[in-house]
Length: 448
Image 1 (cartoon, one colour):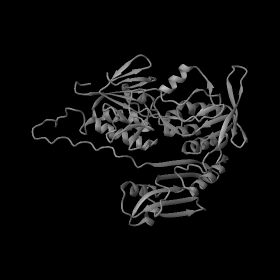
Image 2 (cartoon, rainbow, N blue to C red; image 1 turned 60 degrees about the vertical axis):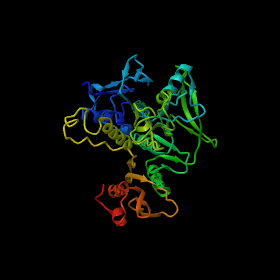
Image 3 (cartoon, rainbow, N blue to C red; image 1 turned 135 degrees about the vertical axis):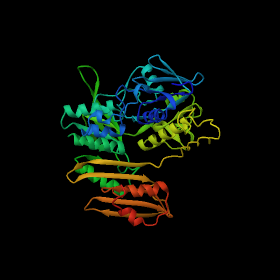
Image 4 (cartoon, one colour; image 1 turned 120 degrees about the vertical axis):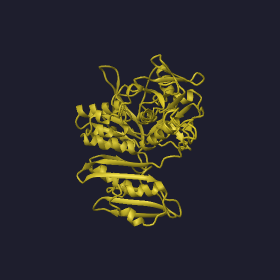
């Protein structure tokens, strides 16, 4: 570290935090320390469903190690903004010139009857300070699906009990991914979705119906418009712990279960930011320079809220990390570069501000008797009054393409089955190009 380099501390060793560290390291722009709470080698959370399905070994999901800047198994417990210091659970203190919160998000644990076993107040307080949602000990057999530990626990359960009766609560992207992975491993899977269709945030009714049919062909039993009221548990005589035995629905119907997966969405981890007095709404509020209400503290990834939006997706997290690396580096590598202050030298161009990400969701579902199913969704998939909608559907090939056009601009789309045109469509949407040949875009076989 040179005397000119700033000290940057990153809280969070996930995709966003490590991408930022790599970007700053490549520019030699700062002395970086990353605090990673999990003891595991850093991993790509997007690949957890592939690990659960058995297609990838856990090490395949590993992210490139940033070297000695990563402190694994260390949790930040308090931010001292006056001293510009982060206090950790091992008693150490990391001082910073710039602090970056890349704390990600936690799985939402719904208020189901029988879900929590009360524990001591100290544990509950600690969970709240960390930005968690747990109020106690989960019964044996109940799993969130957010971390590598969650994934490995589920994988072990399905490995030791062929035909494991599993109920997945939540039919969004996370629940669908978990359900199809468990079905691939031979589990008997029931998917319970409170909404009227699967992946309702990304898919329209017709696309969701195709997804429903594909999952059913994999042997997954699906219940939509189905509200879960609570869990049935029993006490295990050997150790006095509770174990899940079933799921109780609001209509009184009971689903037997050896395992329950909670896939009810995620919530930004904002506990540290709140305790430090930063502005927090749904996420940690940041401006176009990804600064929080304290100019020395930034936030990126799932925990950050920019222009009223929390993305919760890998693409925006990576884009924010890249933008912040450029902003912290000043747009021209490390401070004190040769051109700085040179007679007649032009000042380095200021790095562009972060103005938001146009996010695209992609998912590949496992092969059933009729083969795999790929899907992609982007932008506004529900039309507004006055919008034009174009659909191409082929029941034989199980393909579906729908785009929403506003004026002469593409504003959103959904594709299932054949994604060869998704690249061309996404580029037109991202660049906000005026449409000249929509049919060509929809049928382009070389755009992906």
